[in-house]
Length: 457
Image (tube, rainbow, N blue to C red; front, side):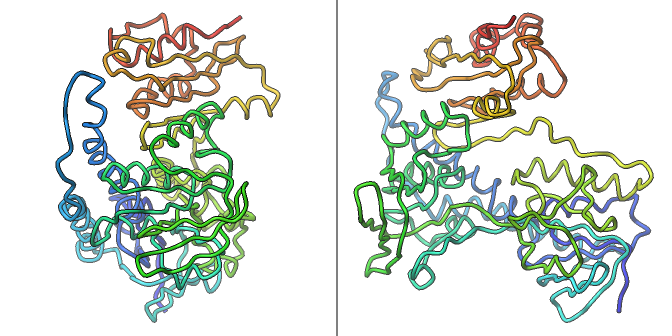
């Protein structure tokens, strides 16, 4: 039985851990799917490449209010799809080849790994190995809800929907979170009739309430949004799929050519038999880790979706850097920093957030003040004729420290960055607003004016 100094399960952010300082270590890397993990192959990178294309396709529809007559001639789905994956697929294969054939101290196993005990792993290739140290970075997969006949009906997840052979005329999206909202934007911009099915009374319900309400209001003008629906049964039709639901007005059905299930993701711990290693888990299946990314077994560390509730690539990358340091410096470990984790939804409009929502601040009994600033009130907002976007800030009235920031509108994911920086480095709202120049008439004036509007002590 072969023994390794380090075993890494998963090739997303986990693949970045081996470096020159580990050249003397014998390392095994285990991967059950495509090399490179979720973000590269079926997650943030290809989806944002689709989103950017969708933004271009949607632009002519917004041009008339600016005095420009523009129109969309055609959407060439195969060309769009192939441009994206002809770039991504070689990266995945190149990463695999580099690790497998150009790293003398690295052995790649391609199979579904499974713990035998805390130091022993079945690689899924017919070979069992042992290790001194193990990093679990095996990620997550789409959750499939329990719906009668769903498996025989046929459906897509975010893993497969981007590689469709042809663009459907209609699409049902089951889900109301960021994945569902981004794909709704993509496919509707390409001319697909989109129906969104949500169990809750809002889309993006985990966002600040005002943001979620505004997004839901806008979404209803673009897509067929069905809220407070429970899907009972799925049915295959001659042209596609039919869903049977219960809603506020009783039983109803909806039909489309294709069905996308986007209700969330679940950690892959069940595939790993993590309990065989006596690794403590959360109730939802995530691996419990301490501030140093260590599990209940000190020689096993975990990172990314399999242990984090953020499900964000930038969080996984940060945690991989921490794990790398702590493997190399066990006597001087560093903790992960999850104080101010930002997130963005690349739909239309974009949403970006960091820190507490107003509802969370209220629930925690924190004294706070808020301020909002509309895109329509700044000069660049006038240029864009944006009438729905706004920024909302939450702050400690005594210190001026920002507690949360939430933006809905054009380029929200970029506009929010100085607020993330201020929170991370302890810059108070007054100093941030008044202690620097703000380019006029650029979009960051949205942030400046919101900061100035905070009713601080």
